[in-house]
Image (tube, rainbow, N blue to C red):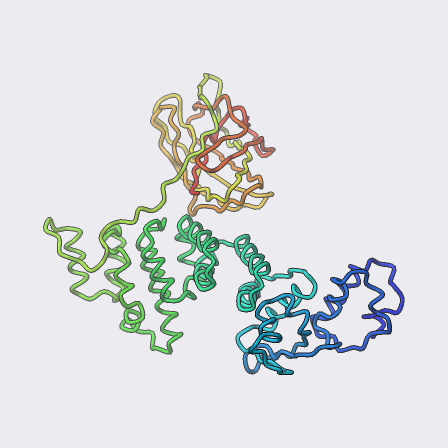
Length: 461
């Protein structure tokens, strides 16, 4: 088997392929003695160092990595490690260096430590979704900045409403302000999805407070309230407390008053918060008086509604018109493709209405990427006979990544004669976002770049 890892003769494939094979093998630890003159098989110092990755050959230090019961013993080479990390340099060659053959590292996961070693030895970054946070921790601890930056880029790329709250908590812990800002952008725009995600219940109390304080959360307050109760239930379990109303209120503490209960719709309050049992009788009575009485009582709860986010509208036509023979609908699809240069969140479309007086339309809107449906909704809207556009919304805003074309579609049912756009633009600058348009093969009703329906994209940025 030694010949497979350190072959006596240079293989037919490139040396880089051989090194990659060593990497894969060495992930499981390579304790084999190489064939003579193995150094001659690799032309660069990088490739020769890579052979030493997770290899006991010439190892002068070992690390016992991981918590008790889940440790892994990994070999290291002080010189290589010191060249890759100032922390290792101080550990092995600094004034306070200790001459230990074995070093215990209980606070780093073995897979994350291996990923860091692979970068130091092989100059390769190998990240996975389930270990990237642990790898970021290791990179921060041992001051390996380029690996840390790669971890943050990986997290930003994979950021979604499902993991935004957890990553917000971690980004603050790791002091990564750019990642924190990206997390807030997702949480603000897709607040209801983020608050309903399983990850929301995993955040720490400080992160919970920061989210509940957030002025720009784009969510109904009843959703915020229900999310806080879900978090409290999981927190009771974490603290080994009985799942009681009293304990839920106890773990929420003063954060309960950051929920803007007086700004809920009255139905939401009466059927939800008022019957949850979390509020005291006096609090419930005072909030009911807040809704109904002219002289309102003082409340501990914030009574000013959140500002939320103001949607932006990208209008792609320079004029609109109507003719007696168009625009007609008979179950056919109007569609257009678009791409943006920055991450945005599509909240809905602005659509034209009837050119023959007031009329109601049924609209099925859809957003796709490479044939995969990302969002759709069936709703109705009323047009007043003007050439204005009328908004139709998705249930939740849809996250749109930059530099990729998406397909916006609508199937309308209603008055067959409507306004339609003219003098369409292939590129529109909307605030700090540039939007490009191109024709879609899904369009069977005549809509294209130059004219047709779907005059507006409504989005948060």
